[in-house]
Length: 386
Ligand code: XIL
Image 1 (spheres, rainbow, N blue to C red):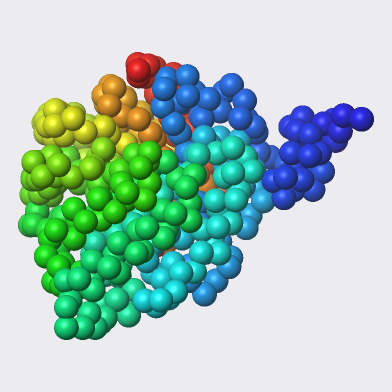
Image 2 (image 1 turned 180 degrees about the vertical axis):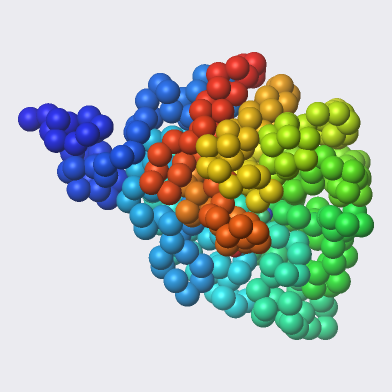
C-alpha cells in the first residue's frame, strides 16, 4: 500500500524512515524533497551545484545539528551536496599525531551517500595557528623538522582523502593570507618546512584525490579595508600558476553582511562592485574557477523588525548572487547552514539589541524566508554554464 497519504508531504514511509523520521514527517516544513523546485534542482538546471554545511558536533561530542531529523529532512530536500562544517578539520579529526577520529565525518558521509548527495571536503589544511590543535602547535618535529612536517601533512591528506573517495571538491588550503597585511601566515608547519607547505598540500591532494576539484578557500571581501587581503590572495594564486601547483578554483567563502549604510540591503553599489569585479576578473583571468563555499548573511547591522530585516537580507543576497552567478566560472553555491538557529553567527558577536540573528535561508521553525526565495530567483535567472 502506498503510505504517502500518512504524512503531510506525500513522502513514502521508506523515505521518512531513511531520513530518521517517523512515518508522519515533521509538520511545518515546506518540503521540496528533491523536487523540481528544490534549490538543488534549480542549480542543476544551470550546471551548478547547491548545498549546505552541516555539523555533527565537535571533538568529544557526538551531538550536533545533524542529530535533528527535521534538519536532515530539509537538507535532503534542498541540497545536491553537503559539506561537514567542522568534522574534517584537524581540531576534530586529529586528537593527536597518531590518531584519526573519523566517526563524526563518517556519519555525514554515510548520510550523503544514502541520499545520493555529493560531498565537499573542508578542509585539509586550515593554515592558521589559531585553528591548529594545541598538540600540533607545540609539536616536536625532531632533528629533521622539514621532512617530519612534510610527512605529517602528506600522511594526513592521503589518509583523509583516501577515507572519503566520494568527496569530489576539496578545500585544500583555507585562510592562509593574513587579512590585514596580505602576507602568508606562519604556522609550525611553515616554520619547519617553509611556505612550500602550501604547494605540498595541493600536490598531496591531487595524488590522493585525482578527480577532485582542488580549492584555495578564503574570506576576502570587496571593501577598501580588504584591499590587502585581495592582493595577497591574488599573489598566492599567481604563484600557484607560475609553479604549476594543482589548484583548480578559488573558494569565496561569502560570509557577507547586509550593511545598513546607504539603506538596508542597498546591495553593492559603486565603487565596491567595481573593486570586487576587478578581483574576480583577475582570478578567472588566470584560469581559476570560482565557488561560493560558505554563504550566509550577517544581519547584525540591520533594523530589528523581522520583516524589514529579512527583506533587506534577501535583497542583499540576491544582488550578491546575481553578480557572482554572472561569472560562468562559478560552479558551486554552498550555504553555511540552512536554518537560523544552527548558524555559527547566532552567538558570534551578537546584535546590540540582543535579538537573535537571522543569517540563513530558513527560520528557527524550518520555514523558508525571503532569502530562500532570493536564492531560488537568482538561480532561475542565472546563465547556464557549460
Ligand atoms: C566555523 C564553524 O562554523 C564553527 O562552528 C566553528 O566553531 C569555527 O569555524 N571560515 C571557515 C569555516 O573556513 O571553517 C568557519 O566555520 C567559518 C569561517
